[in-house]
Image (tube, rainbow, N blue to C red; front, side, top):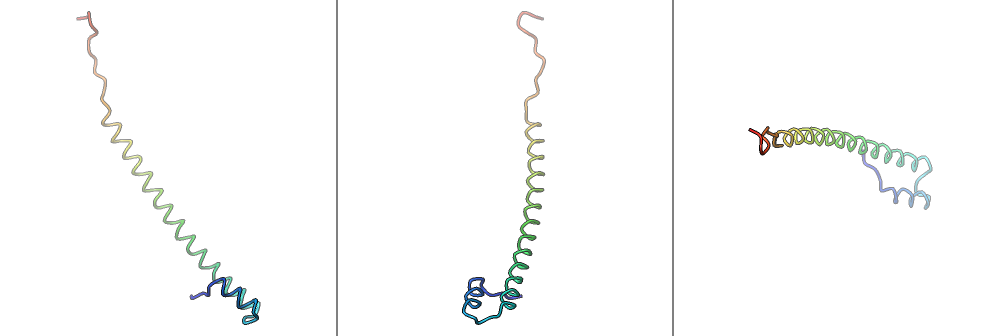
Length: 79
């Protein structure tokens, strides 16, 4: 669905080139497009958050595996 530039819609309405009903219709089209874009962005953010969480968990496991494990060594003066 093609929409008009919001500033152009307001200018056309102010100049009397479109009716109030037409201005409302164009505004609703913009709202629908903004909602669709926001929904897509929300999905992308959710997907990226999941990827970051998985990567963070993996990195925590790698760091834990690389930590040197303490070995029991005799203290000086003890056999």
